[in-house]
Image 1 (tube, rainbow, N blue to C red):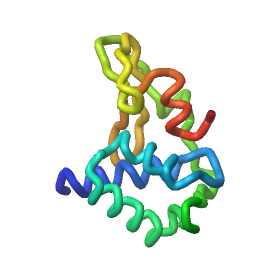
Image 2: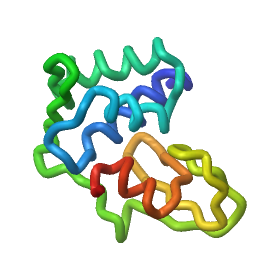
Image 3: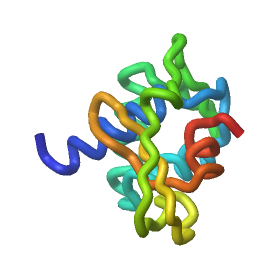
Image 4: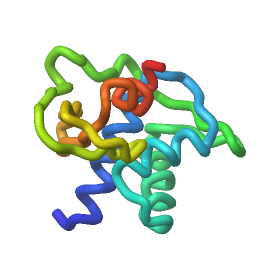
Length: 121
């Protein structure tokens, strides 16, 4: 699997696990940017997510197709101590939260950003 393919799969896992039914396209892109900031890869992720039925786009709104899929914080989010930088906001962290998906690990995030990325806030 190429690095590009791995990033697409990780972003698709993230989108499939969002705990919200609808988001603005900008908010979806904000989540994807935790995986990549490459505009062409972001477009590929959105197109692939739509083709696979993970999301449905309607203009500037995106509907998620969760089907009961969500992140179990107790088993899928690991917490590690160390020197980290949040992948969402860039803040320095001494405690990093990492989300474990089938396709790989995403993080680190701060405690509030991990909830924001997953749609819990």
